[in-house]
Amino acid sequence: MTIEIKVPVLPESVQDATIATWYKKPGDVVAQDDNLVDIETDKVVLEVVAPQAGILEKIIKSTGETVLAEEVIGIVTPGAQGANANHASVEAQAQPAAAPAASKMDNAEKTAGPAARRMMAEHDIAPETVQGSGKGGRVTTQDVKSAQAAPQVAKQPAAPITLTGDRPEKRVPMTRLRTRIAERLLSAQHNAAILTTFNEINMKPVMDLRNRYKDQFEKQHGVKLGFMSFFTKAVIEALKRFPVVNASLDGTDMIYHGYFDIGVAVSSPRGLVVPVLRDADKLSLAGIEKSISALGMKAKEGTLSIEEMTGGTFTISNGGVFGSLLSTPILNPPQTGILGMHKIEERPVVEKGEIVIRPMMYVALSYDHRMIDGAESVRFLVTIKDLIEDPARLLLDI
Image: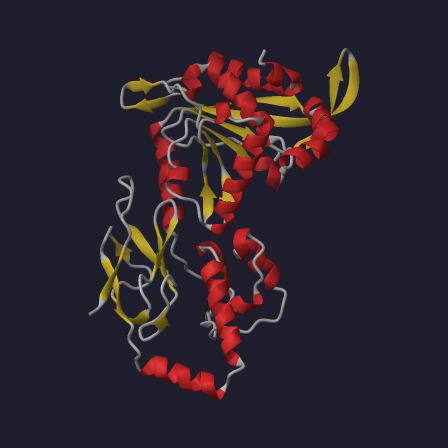
């Protein structure tokens, strides 16, 4: 009797998927719950594990092939002890010292997220050399990066890449996520009347408040106090005053949302992803910081669920963490607005007739002019500016 390995059920919004990486080859012995293959969708990477111990007899769909929900992609013979298993047993008896390393390698592979496993494979890093720092000893991409500096025991020789000539090139297919990002951004530019309005914010008041309470905040809540929580609170208040910015367009219908699901753009090893803070208006500053931290870690490990990346009524993107001084963020359809934060830089400004040096940040609001008028967009951004420059108003709800 054999067991069919199938593609998991995909959400309604996902039509198909791509085989990303097989971690076993035909003839390999597998243990129950071993990760056999990663399947990449437009949004997340899904792990497919062995339902029982046995031998992987056949791979039906190879790396790079497109697959559908519940399609058979491999065959496992449960409880089988084939030639490979016997060979492995003989080899283990002849070289007993190798067994602990193999076990350690298996454990490392099991506790590593899809992004971390892929990074280990791409850089030919042996899993047994990587120490996991994540929850429950989970191996993160940062752990893999740290292990790159250490001497490695390769799992298998890396396939050589031959580049010839004076001007070498390498052609690499786009991942499904990168392809989807390209499609959505192009669609946004073609199908929306995108305009951007700019302003600048004096960050000194919120920086002073943060510096005054950051140690006490972290001690009490177990998370660092950053700027994203202040901006998220300010955005929510501005959305309450200008509901059209929290709306979406469906054909010729304008859909006003009575809730505030804030998307936070995050850079991950697979590309840009936008996990969503559900009902962000009900979260405290600490709750927002904890949620953003947890989602950011999941993005780096490639463990975000489709539910965590679906929906969203407004998006915040912080290019300042990469040093961006000014940019024009692009809409995340079907949303009608996105806020771009940027690098904080000390600049001379005039206050009460005097030139002073202040930590300033440029902010940008890109919006769909089909729904949002220029006056509304400017007033929306000014509201955020006023709240950040007087953060006590966020706490007093005025």
